[in-house]
Length: 113
Image 1 (tube, helix red, strand yellow):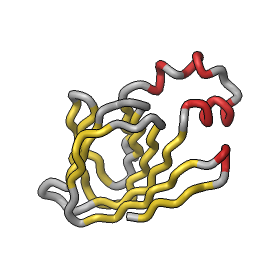
Image 2 (image 1 turned 90 degrees about the vertical axis):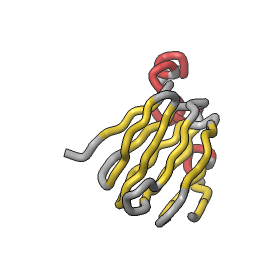
Image 3 (image 1 turned 60 degrees about the horizontal axis):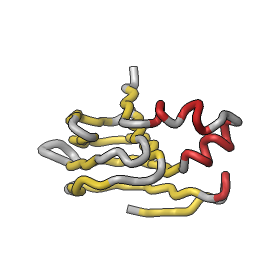
Image 4 (image 1 turned 135 degrees about the vertical axis):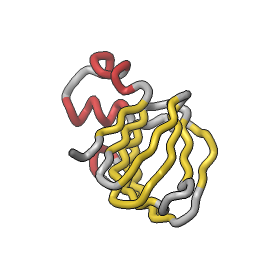
């Protein structure tokens, strides 16, 4: 795993993760996490929802959403994720925070067609 700091929008973290076997315990972030999966397989849990994530998927986890993940029986995973505060998203989009803050709650998975 490699964590870098990007200078844009006042600075945000970028995590590149490539693992064969890994499990992380339930935790929360104050930021919005956007993860693009480049390969492999992950069993994920966000709040009470369990689901699989694989190559080509984009996972967005809202702030303070309890989440965890594990490699399970499949191959490990490779992904790049960014951690953005709600204020950074407001600044980047020009929208008022109140207009989209509730929409960021929970999680979303976009599957590659």
